[in-house]
Length: 289
Length: 289
Image 1 (spheres, rainbow over the protein chains, first blue to last red):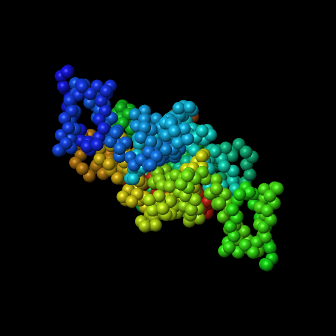
Image 2 (tube, chains in turn orange, purple):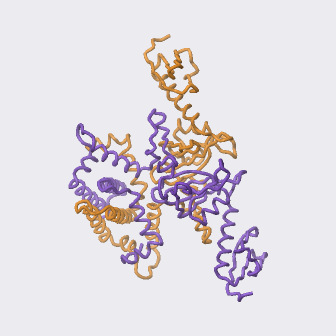
């Protein structure tokens, strides 16, 4: 046996599964000190011990999920930048294990009784950045970035049927997905921009005036940024700061509509800048968070 | 019978349920012109016809949901302002009907076999603004505003267990819920603010310098707003606009941390300003979207 150069003490519950890479159990010395709840693995191969360690941690995680009588939990895919709920499916033990290792949102198809990685047909994978379990451990969020529209209809998300529209007898519009405040406002501004192509009647709305008059728009953005700063400089109350920040956001979003830039792109810039992978970029700018 | 002053033609599928207020069917004349798919209701009471109309629309909606073999669909409560997934439960026909009428997120408790309105004990109701169905009609989003923390643990949401933390052997922190980019950045800035109370070692990060030096912070906000405007004035590319908007957002969020204002408060201001209920406010400011 090769020289043992790596020993790790792993604190696992007694029911922990231990996996040996390549089934080669002979290359490891295992000492299970049950009285202290420790599992000590010694190996000639540092990477193999790391692999055992991670696999064992994943098994402990999978054991901790409260699978239902069909071995399933609810899985919800959410856009990490916008917060949009992309789709919901069901997840079994294999689906969660696959998502943990592949970082692609994977579900269990109840109709086909098979694992199903979202995007395996459409190529619109959901790239999972983190996974969250709820307090009951029977509901799972895949927080990730979709490569493209998630719904098989081509809609950005599967949730495009508004009950208030249904009750008001309005047509279901696959482009009108469930939107939280920021994206609802973004959509309204975008609609005002589209309406500019139509014949105009009456006095244009404020948004339309800003969309048409870039000097006015830029002077408002500078003015609102100044007013936001003055809430600090003149020690104004919190309500004033929230209101001025609302003005900055709204006017800046009109500018983004003018340029055809989405909030999601801005958030992606921020995520990359402030995520660990962006530390080097920040350092190169001489700034760290 | 009182004079008939209201006739409404309702286009419903033939299986539509019709409900009569107070069970008083005698006060209505019903003509079911099946050959044209119309249901015509005549009544002495305009409000009663409206009530029948809405109840019938709700029944049509409830019929359209693909309830599973236990009569359930998945229900997900989402914060309308932040997009945070608050909790997930199961919804039956009565729970959805109750949510539609009461506007409080209501579920079916599988353990207690009873309707359960979130907040009935804690008073932390989720006030539902709209409901969305997915493309398969077996998954439902309650898009609403919570009155307080949603989780029974006191956490803002039930999703505070990060799998990447579990795999890295870190403690589960109930304050660290699943966060999308904007709120993750907000949390990082807030942590930097908290760290200022501790003894400082080494060169302070850029965020800490901004938190400490309000003149620097305000000059950066004015500078970044100016640079954002120049992407329009000097016709710079979209990538530049996204990057400058990222700078505006980040620096403005540091200012909000200084003032102790949350992004959620800003979004609430915007929602109220731009929602229908806010139209009067906008008019009073001489501005409409």
